[in-house]
Length: 591
Image (cartoon, rainbow, N blue to C red; front, side, top):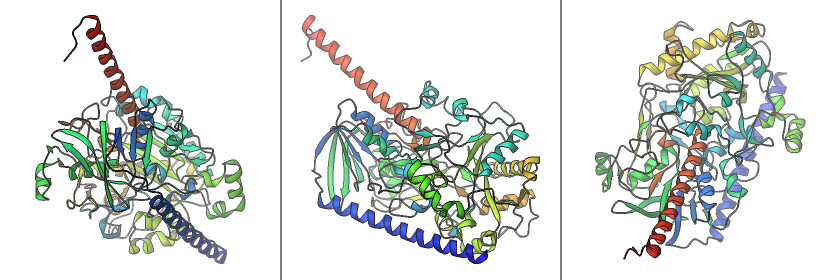
């Protein structure tokens, strides 16, 4: 048995290495053909320029082009090659050329079990953005999340655009059904939380189509139009501003600098890191920070401030007496490949998330408020791949992995993770220099507010309660009581132990936002304060994080913004029509 398992893991390493080679080779081919047939012309003019082809940008650009407006969509990365739409491969795509591979600055209060106390933040550098490498969860959150955004935003969120493909799970392990039974035993609501926009639990819904990953770049092909121009490998370096008006974008493609001009609007949809970075490079941001870097200040705004992120912990924390989750036999069984490619079914359609839900901690006395905790159930643990994939993607230190995760290799571990939904800790994104190709300084200041630790401890207490249900006890559910490195001096499961555990195993949920927050940086129409024709539409404008994975909310934001731009166009046409009538009927023509 041991020899067989080792053979399986050797096979896993070889297949992963081959796949990474394939990804890099496909990327180089894409770059070569883009360079060979590079038809970019300088000083081209468009109605709209959208920077970033991610969850927001691709959808917004496609919608704006529907009515005949000329739209330029700039994407710093390339197009995704075949096979990147296999859901099971999500963690393998991270840390490749299709990922910006951001790393935070060392954290003072958190991430002590990660290399250099730094958190790795995968963000998509590819058509489709992070929707190309996320875990595909489509979670709308709680209705109270949206009440202060727009009066009609709840309707916008609940109204599913037909171009966005949402799917139920096409395969799940036994773990999902057992967890939901345990939650019912505790009298929690189990149903379709996306329809109810309330607390409760469900089998996760995914952005998936016929068993394959759906990403936002798919909308660019659904209704092709000659008015939409998509440029890949085109990295925006500066917003061109005249007085207080955005007139265009400077971008670099294959070391050549180009300029594109916009008649109606420049829209930044580059995400919570790149959008504030581009604004600050262009002189829009905190005055002192820009002056310290020698950047001329055009508009003094708190760009890059209020960075927030959902914080996750609890990897490999739960053990069972038998295998209930996704295992290597499911993955490498030839029937799994056959089911996937022929029918879009089977384990290869798994994104790694099976159950999600939200609930109120005991610290939250107002149970009618938005929930403060999310539960995410993953049918596997970090230890299952011998550290070849997930350890590297997360950035777990060698010491922590060898002492805590490696001994679990042949155990039946899964991840039942509590996630902090509304952190009190606030961080920032700052420029390293005035060079657009320098990586920004990302400091989420994880756990700098003690309340965040207290809330996550309540999440771990909730898991303890869940493990004590009759349903889970029947399957031998228990905590992994192996002391986490650095916390050996604390009594296991005590409050001090959990505090230490959280401070060491502090993980991103890949949901950064707030760095161009609405109200502080942009107004309710997404327009940057004190600027004309300059807008931001992506996760950076979020007033607060929604109670769940943010991809659904960002897609809804893009759809809302597209309607607002179209409504503005209609109003302008009506205004011109009225002026025309006044001119020729009442002879009051303007000179």
